[in-house]
Image (cartoon, rainbow, N blue to C red; front, side, top):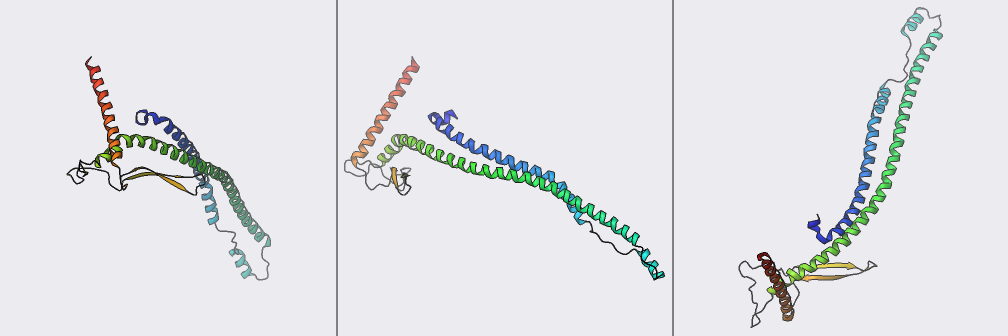
Length: 252
């Protein structure tokens, strides 16, 4: 990483720290969702028990067949109120137990629901923090990357783009293009090539554009071309001097 980023390591470490702050919140949110999933899984048997109890038939008592037959045999006799009362009491007890069991299970389910609601509140609070951390990361990354681009592009412009563009604009003694634009294998910047950045003022209501490189500019003075070529050849001379010095050092 150090080799790839070189002197820009500090800027990328700064961006990495802000990215890690976002990731830390993401991990906490993921942990909250895992806790909710675990609670729902623990609660599932309670839901199954409630469903089974609710499927059972509610209180449904019909006349006793023996009583009916006895009354038909002797219409003068009275129904056995004690027996009917006992039957109703037993059935009512079973129904009350069923309903209270369902209520108990639902209370336990509500308890799990309360725990989940608290975790969901935690997730909502973390989401607010995450948005702020994400915005901070985006701003830091935008500013740092933009600065690095300007710095690196300045070097690329001086070392490659400016002389390459100047070479394509060289003229001969008669003022004609020294190199043919349609020469086989020839490569040059397209006239559409434009590298520019926009910067908004502090009010955010206006911006200005800085053209870092514009191959489609309407004109390029001969002096500008000559200056570019002079600086480029000077750089080549320095590079050659360093190469010669390195070779001599290797021979000694």
